[in-house]
Image 1 (cartoon, one colour):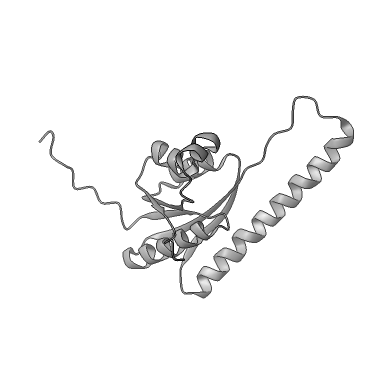
Image 2: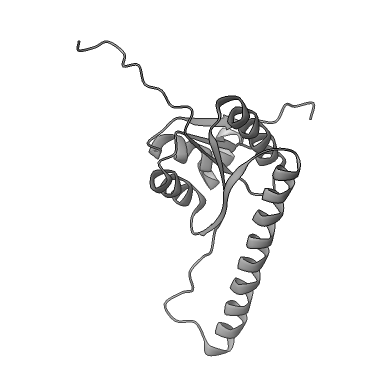
Length: 160
């Protein structure tokens, strides 16, 4: 019947948790681990590394420096996500996949969730104020607006 809510079931399914090394993302990963364990859902970690593209013309002397910077950033990102997955596994959480994506974090999170067929996205939020949010944007706001599935935005408690 039209207008009546569907009995949609999101879990168990695949949970995508976005991590970036912040305390807020750490709180989100703990929450995602709890949901995963309680629901039997697969947990997928994603670290989105924002890489700004070079300008149309970059002097040759700078290209080598830029390329080595990008390679080092990618190496550190892969090391970070592998370490995070190992820590979670050591704590008893089953991590299905740990992945690094390169690009704008909000876009990469939404795209990965769609490709994965995620049932839930879990991510942290720093809770930027209105002016700061307007100036720098909010990854969590953008993900909430564009995601195809529910998004759980976790904030650290002020006492933490």
